[in-house]
Image (cartoon, rainbow, N blue to C red; front, side, top):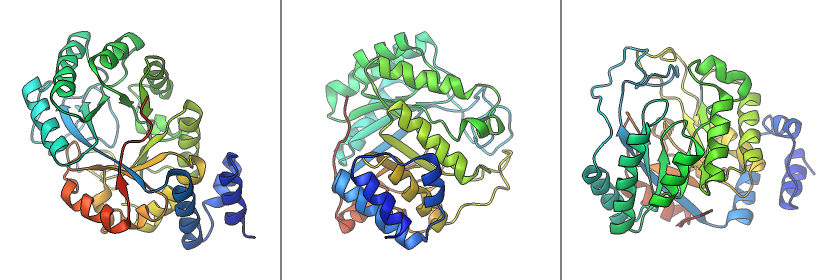
Length: 325
């Protein structure tokens, strides 16, 4: 029995693999690793596929200095637009459009460190309108909010909060200096206390090691995260990471497969940068990934919902909700 088979059996028996085992696993032959990860996905999650879309609900002029981001006010990028919080009419219009196409989750994402209490009140009106007029689930990514604010958002009808860890605690200070890793962890804990499910992953290709990626997912696992976005860095001209090399499809498949071993019953979600790998994520969807953000990203073009639906059908997936609070 190979090490991959040994760890696969350990996972399928209900036990967690350790950091050291995950590091060893990351060096295994890719074909064997990917096949084992896909087997774990099939046995733990079936053919369920969790699809969501996002709307850039507030764009640009961000106070934070995240080195990957086109919306940071610290860098000079080609971001062509900047605006405050969208009104309910526009947020609802796009929610209806996504609901009509069979999308299950719709996430409102805003730039900045956090929304103000006034902005939270405004977006709660938008969430209530979405819940009244559509059947789509509402997720939010509003920065470093507190428990009281999250409770208001939940009462309005949202079901999930997204806050990416981005990388390991060790490496995060190389990525951002205007807020801390601990603030992100406290945000996720506050959302969970408010009764919301939590979604948290990171960006691959920031200069981090495989150990950093593994440590990030272990932290997410300890927090009870079941939805783990895997973003591939799209190097934006004008940001400090503009010269970073783009990871290959094979590297991304390896990352996804290791994450599946770490969170065997989770939704490993391909997110930003998926279009850079050429096959729209198909190899990753055979290597343990079983969720995706479809449509356009915040400041870059994505893959259309219609294209994704066709691909998922060809792979035998069923788009359905998972892990509702």
